[in-house]
Image (tube, rainbow, N blue to C red; front, side, top):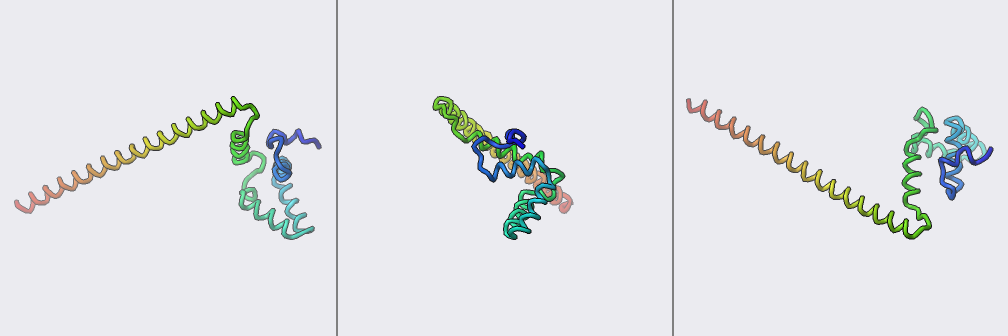
Length: 143
Protein backbone atom coordinates (compact mmCIF):
# COMPACT_ATOMS: atom_id res chain seq x y z
CA UNK A 1 0.00 0.00 0.00
CA UNK A 2 1.37 3.39 -0.93
CA UNK A 3 0.81 6.65 0.83
CA UNK A 4 -0.73 8.11 -2.32
CA UNK A 5 -4.16 6.76 -1.40
CA UNK A 6 -4.50 9.07 1.57
CA UNK A 7 -1.89 11.73 0.89
CA UNK A 8 -4.60 14.12 -0.31
CA UNK A 9 -6.11 14.03 3.18
CA UNK A 10 -2.93 14.77 5.10
CA UNK A 11 -0.23 17.42 4.58
CA UNK A 12 3.14 16.06 3.53
CA UNK A 13 4.85 17.02 6.79
CA UNK A 14 2.09 15.72 9.08
CA UNK A 15 3.02 13.46 11.97
CA UNK A 16 2.51 9.73 12.21
CA UNK A 17 -0.67 10.18 14.25
CA UNK A 18 -2.32 12.26 11.51
CA UNK A 19 -1.19 9.78 8.88
CA UNK A 20 -2.53 6.87 10.96
CA UNK A 21 -5.83 8.65 11.43
CA UNK A 22 -6.12 9.26 7.68
CA UNK A 23 -5.20 5.63 6.96
CA UNK A 24 -7.92 4.37 9.33
CA UNK A 25 -10.44 6.89 7.98
CA UNK A 26 -9.73 5.66 4.45
CA UNK A 27 -10.74 2.14 5.52
CA UNK A 28 -13.85 3.18 7.42
CA UNK A 29 -15.42 2.49 10.80
CA UNK A 30 -14.47 -1.21 10.77
CA UNK A 31 -10.78 -0.33 10.76
CA UNK A 32 -11.27 1.97 13.75
CA UNK A 33 -13.09 -0.77 15.65
CA UNK A 34 -10.40 -3.33 14.75
CA UNK A 35 -7.68 -0.95 15.93
CA UNK A 36 -9.56 -0.38 19.18
CA UNK A 37 -10.02 -4.14 19.79
CA UNK A 38 -6.34 -4.79 19.04
CA UNK A 39 -5.44 -1.97 21.39
CA UNK A 40 -7.48 -3.60 24.16
CA UNK A 41 -5.87 -6.99 23.46
CA UNK A 42 -2.25 -5.84 23.42
CA UNK A 43 -2.30 -2.93 25.90
CA UNK A 44 -5.64 -1.91 27.36
CA UNK A 45 -4.88 1.83 27.79
CA UNK A 46 -4.35 2.11 24.02
CA UNK A 47 -7.74 0.52 23.37
CA UNK A 48 -9.34 2.78 25.95
CA UNK A 49 -7.68 5.83 24.39
CA UNK A 50 -8.92 4.83 20.93
CA UNK A 51 -12.44 4.28 22.27
CA UNK A 52 -12.41 7.70 23.95
CA UNK A 53 -11.10 9.34 20.78
CA UNK A 54 -13.73 7.60 18.63
CA UNK A 55 -16.50 8.82 20.92
CA UNK A 56 -15.04 12.32 21.29
CA UNK A 57 -14.57 12.78 17.53
CA UNK A 58 -18.03 11.29 16.88
CA UNK A 59 -16.58 8.53 14.70
CA UNK A 60 -18.46 5.92 16.71
CA UNK A 61 -21.91 7.27 15.86
CA UNK A 62 -21.46 8.65 12.35
CA UNK A 63 -22.46 6.68 9.27
CA UNK A 64 -18.97 6.84 7.80
CA UNK A 65 -15.54 8.13 8.75
CA UNK A 66 -14.43 8.71 5.18
CA UNK A 67 -16.14 12.02 4.47
CA UNK A 68 -15.54 13.83 7.71
CA UNK A 69 -16.11 17.55 7.22
CA UNK A 70 -14.19 18.55 10.34
CA UNK A 71 -11.11 16.84 8.93
CA UNK A 72 -11.24 18.95 5.77
CA UNK A 73 -11.78 22.13 7.79
CA UNK A 74 -8.85 21.29 10.07
CA UNK A 75 -6.63 20.55 7.07
CA UNK A 76 -7.60 23.82 5.38
CA UNK A 77 -7.01 25.85 8.54
CA UNK A 78 -3.66 24.14 9.12
CA UNK A 79 -2.45 24.80 5.57
CA UNK A 80 -3.58 28.43 5.72
CA UNK A 81 -1.43 29.11 8.78
CA UNK A 82 1.81 27.43 7.73
CA UNK A 83 4.40 29.63 6.02
CA UNK A 84 4.96 29.01 2.32
CA UNK A 85 8.65 29.88 2.32
CA UNK A 86 8.10 32.86 0.02
CA UNK A 87 8.38 35.98 2.17
CA UNK A 88 6.53 38.23 -0.28
CA UNK A 89 3.60 35.83 -0.46
CA UNK A 90 3.61 35.32 3.31
CA UNK A 91 3.48 39.11 3.83
CA UNK A 92 0.63 39.40 1.32
CA UNK A 93 -1.20 36.52 3.01
CA UNK A 94 -0.73 38.08 6.45
CA UNK A 95 -2.03 41.45 5.19
CA UNK A 96 -5.00 39.81 3.50
CA UNK A 97 -5.85 37.74 6.58
CA UNK A 98 -5.59 40.88 8.75
CA UNK A 99 -7.84 42.81 6.34
CA UNK A 100 -10.37 39.98 6.35
CA UNK A 101 -10.26 39.85 10.16
CA UNK A 102 -10.86 43.62 10.30
CA UNK A 103 -13.76 43.30 7.87
CA UNK A 104 -15.23 40.47 9.92
CA UNK A 105 -14.92 42.54 13.11
CA UNK A 106 -16.59 45.52 11.39
CA UNK A 107 -19.38 43.30 10.07
CA UNK A 108 -19.96 41.76 13.52
CA UNK A 109 -20.11 45.27 15.01
CA UNK A 110 -22.63 46.24 12.31
CA UNK A 111 -24.74 43.19 13.11
CA UNK A 112 -24.62 44.06 16.80
CA UNK A 113 -25.79 47.62 16.07
CA UNK A 114 -28.52 46.19 13.85
CA UNK A 115 -29.68 43.86 16.64
CA UNK A 116 -29.65 46.71 19.14
CA UNK A 117 -31.69 48.92 16.78
CA UNK A 118 -34.19 46.12 16.21
CA UNK A 119 -34.45 45.50 19.95
CA UNK A 120 -34.96 49.21 20.59
CA UNK A 121 -37.66 49.39 17.90
CA UNK A 122 -39.46 46.38 19.34
CA UNK A 123 -39.20 47.79 22.87
CA UNK A 124 -40.47 51.21 21.76
CA UNK A 125 -43.39 49.53 19.99
CA UNK A 126 -44.14 47.52 23.13
CA UNK A 127 -44.07 50.66 25.27
CA UNK A 128 -46.34 52.52 22.81
CA UNK A 129 -48.81 49.61 22.80
CA UNK A 130 -48.70 49.48 26.59
CA UNK A 131 -49.33 53.21 26.82
CA UNK A 132 -52.22 52.94 24.33
CA UNK A 133 -53.80 50.09 26.32
CA UNK A 134 -53.36 52.02 29.56
CA UNK A 135 -55.09 55.09 28.04
CA UNK A 136 -57.92 52.89 26.72
CA UNK A 137 -58.31 51.26 30.12
CA UNK A 138 -58.42 54.67 31.78
CA UNK A 139 -61.03 55.86 29.23
CA UNK A 140 -63.27 52.82 29.90
CA UNK A 141 -62.95 53.29 33.68
CA UNK A 142 -63.93 56.96 33.39
CA UNK A 143 -66.93 56.14 31.23
